[in-house]
Image (cartoon, rainbow, N blue to C red):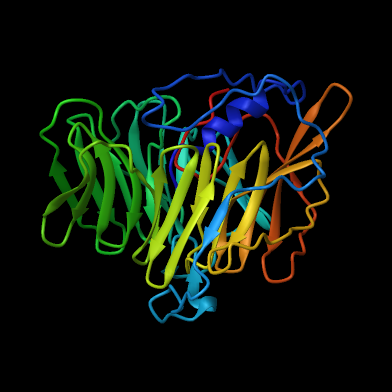
Length: 353
């Protein structure tokens, strides 16, 4: 997942009185993101908002490389499903499990298998695994709405201060690096197994860490790879659109600022017209989720059939955030976990407080 989720968080925080997150609005180059600023609070969105979707009806294949859906977890890997989780300060909070002290205040973080990769205020990249905390690198100072870490299963990628792409395999302990010679900022946008997707001065890049080859996918830098799952790509298009491309899949959707593929590529979550949506990538049909909240955005895949939802309950002068687990196949959702001030979500980016 990319830092596009911060667009939403900034917009929500513009109206947030309790808890007071005070997130500043950020304006960035339109070539790098499709964004808009909301000037009024849209409360209790009930009407379905039309979203432009074009789906090819003759889609075939499972989109998941033959793996069973139950074996697929967040980011399309075979491992234990990711728990509903967040951090505050140095504390890792998991729904239904004891809190854990990670030993350092968390700036940004992601799950890497059952371990946690995180950054701190000193831009160190740290790996927490079963009570042990190890420094594994340094991250470049990112723009405020860019991801600092991008994960796929037991792998995590980032850009270091020398503008090199870095990939760490937490199972083997092997670290790979790749120089990016072009001028300008470089950022990692997606990770799919051994392939790191990035965007820099040379455009949209795909780095194959097995061969060391770097392919320029789009010299213009506009067709950013927003997400990638087992060979299925979610790429940005002009005009508030994104396209799902992969074996047996060809779906174009309208999105304002955020989209994320499920591990098996069967679904995509997005934010459109100030509303969170979940779509079937085979049919383009919208999948309803009974969150029970005034506003909700599915944003993180916990496994192939469960998604974490950032939800808000509106009061007369307040907007309270919750984290909710929903099951895609049934539409049912668990009771939400209230998020206290200072929370950080496992999206690899920092929500400024």
